[in-house]
Image 1 (tube, one colour):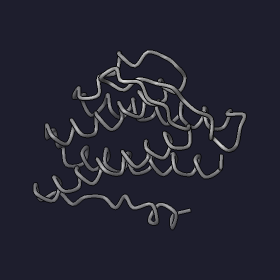
Image 2 (image 1 turned 120 degrees about the vertical axis):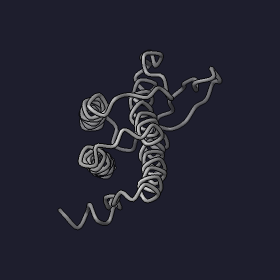
Image 3 (image 1 turned 60 degrees about the horizontal axis):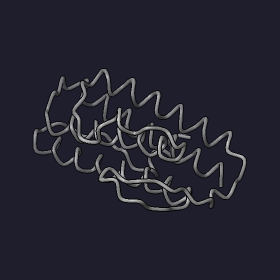
Amino acid sequence: MKKHFIDLFKYNDWANQRIIITLEENESDDYQMLLLLSHLISSQIVWLNRIKDLPTSPFPLWEKYKLRELKTMNEESTSNWLNFIAKHKVDTFTELIFYKNSKGKKFESTLREIMTHVVNHSTYHRAQMVNIMKQKQIQPPVTDYIAYRRLL
């Protein structure tokens, strides 16, 4: 299970980087795309902080960051997630995590459910960004998991 999640978070990083590179190459400062990418990366940070029982308030979920900030945030978030997974003592990731959502409502989920959600959440918002790119005549990058695996 540990290898599976390391692979998924490496894939997530690869896909995020492809989006970032496409935005850089097209010198895009589209508000909606940057907002979605900001939300996606902030969410990655917030979820890991929830798991670690750290404050999430420094990372508003819908604040728009500049592309260069997002690049750094993505690198740090990926590194933090991969370190967390690699050092995690239990390979099943079934322990319950108790947390509050952004509105303060209490929930509990397994670590495995949260980690799966983080990657799926990112995929969802990258797809939204791809749709915006197509509307703006920007060639979107391929970010499918299978394309990532074919590179390995």
